Amino acid sequence: MKISLGADHGGVDLKNAVISALKDMGHEPIDRGTYDHERVDYPDFGKAVAEDVVSGAADFGVLVCTTGIGISISANKVRGIRAAVVYNEDGAEFCRRHNDANIICFGQKYQTPYEAAKYTKIFLETAFEGGRHEGRVEKIAAIETENDR
Image (cartoon, rainbow, N blue to C red):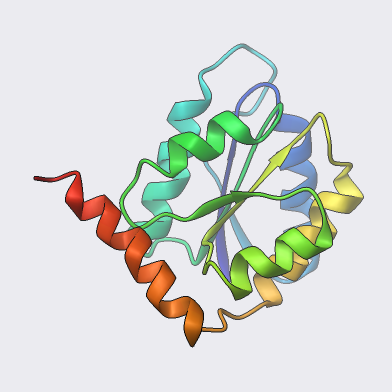
């Protein structure tokens, strides 16, 4: 799979670790930056990865900032994105299984490279369950179109 990744200066080290893990898993990472510890703004990277996912340039996305929160909020502003901040295995599984999340987000402050790689693997290998959850995901999408009025 093609996986788009992005991070600000507070998440660049964890992003780079996940890129390495994705390569080891046989995936094709698309690195949207940042590439060093110079101060940058996380919304720029959240948007870039989200646009890769909605355009089909990437199958899924991974975003990292210090907490995972700011960058996930930014990504979720892009229509069609369901970005979830994940802190454990259960979250990695259920954000896909029940919410059809298409971007997983981490806080470099809270996850080790091992954990982020493990949660990303679970995320990528878990299918959306559909069924009773389909209507809920459709309601999320409907909220996006309400803002157009």
